[in-house]
Length: 263
Image 1 (cartoon, rainbow, N blue to C red):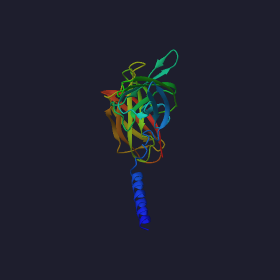
Image 2: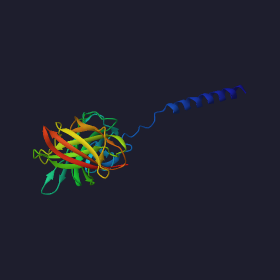
Image 3: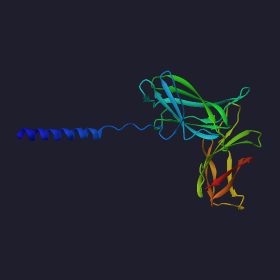
Image 4: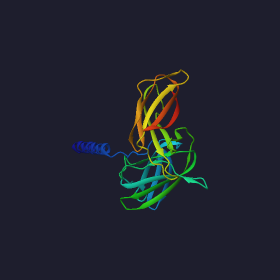
């Protein structure tokens, strides 16, 4: 009888140890790209690159996330110099578009954040360059991507005869009330270079043409960094609104507008 009690005690203790070990075992790591749309994936040498975006790529400002993995160890690469560039090959003519590279060489939550502003629909080349700082490998990737039509980017000629590209970033889904308002401003230096414009004054004027009124409490967009201008736009009711934008560099430089449906 005593032996049976001892065996039962040992069995209970063993089960307790097993349960403790199970409860403290590490959970499977979360994929940093979970919830993002996969644009393409390729492996060159020992480096795998996957390109993601928030949704499908379209004309306008697109956030792009680069996931770099060591294809031998299957481990995420956290330290790398990552850069992107864009190219549209139209046969007799080639041109690029504005793009933004990561601010540093360390991944943010496992991904290297970039952005590309596609200025027209059609087939583009998205080039990704990776210098893996762990093993010093340098590799280049090319992804052929189709860009859907959208009305977020406007091509405008300024009074200085320069060509500018104005891109609406926010609001993505306008609502009644005060909305974040963000746009990017770039100019065409040549067919392959579209630097950010950081020195213009922007005035915002929303109106509802069908009702003949505007709205109060708007905040004119001010430059933040890399050609991004942030402000506020106020919609007082649902329906179709027009946002007129006037740009100044001393005197009037250019004008454009966006039509937005507020839900």
